[in-house]
Length: 493
Image (cartoon, rainbow, N blue to C red; front, side):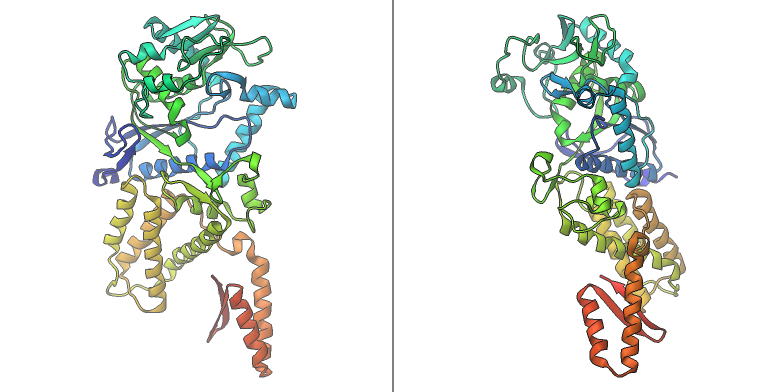
């Protein structure tokens, strides 16, 4: 029997503002769409955090036995610099500045996006469609909305009529805004826009003569609106009504609001049951921005080549750091936070690696089944990865107690413990079992072993002051020496 039969998930639905019991449209099947990157620059760490949130959601749903179709798009056209449908296409602008073809820009940064996500051990989505690969589908939706009188064409561009739509459907249902407030807070049109109202958004834009990226349509040679792309791709692969739509908090308005409106206008039904939004990532308590220098690229975390961090960190440590905050919480990226996460990560891996060496007993001093249920309860409660990690550390403490001889475990419980730790640490959280040696500390190990040898010689020569000094200096550096019958070993804290 699949695990989802015994596990009721509650999801915080941005549409209702409450946690709701997750009931898929079709039992055993989940359709999930997540807004992917606009590929005109290296992937931002904040984007990585968002996609990581939905990676563990994807992983957990699969772990429970759901058949999941996860669609995450690539925006390779139509995303203008400004949400008010003005400015250059971001990809076309990058191509112009670098004097290359737009699709060269797309290729370069799509490859970068995939490389970075691979380093973080993301599962690939089921389908990764592109906006330029779905121009025909977008034109069909525009025709449908025009026929229903909820859009208008002017000078070769087509705009969604927000006020007309709002007569029968509430525009702003997701972001809890109303059109009257939007009208009151909007700037007057400058006379150069073709829109009837500032809230109207582009479904199709006529390309200016200098605009490289253009396609033929019944209205003009032009390009689709950014919001329309996601509606076309999500409904093509998941149907007009699907389970989950996710993205960053910054996309709630206007992007996702516009998606709801145009999907309802085209298909006469709400497109999505559960809207999920991952919160933002800041750094050192401030907004992350290139312009202020408060910024770091994922590759700089791995290399350590950034003034905001003291050393290089492995992708698994960085992933572990991010998952210690709930996806709906703001995450503050700091050097101290990474250092603490690195210690915790290796402590957890050490415990998992020690499971195979544990000797079973006739009784267990720890209730493994109860602990396992706590792990499921954490993920069932809106995918609460921090609570899950706390539960994994509880098990790690028990494993260490068994090693020390102060706790016992039966063979059946040992098997359950091992399987559960592996399922949640590696399959669900997506961590990779990196050891300290694999993480580049071979030189450290060699240096410490040399100091242990020198200390041993000092002790044999009765030079106890030198022996104690080596031990104390290493302890101050976070390296503990452990003298035993088999010799001296060391651990790092």
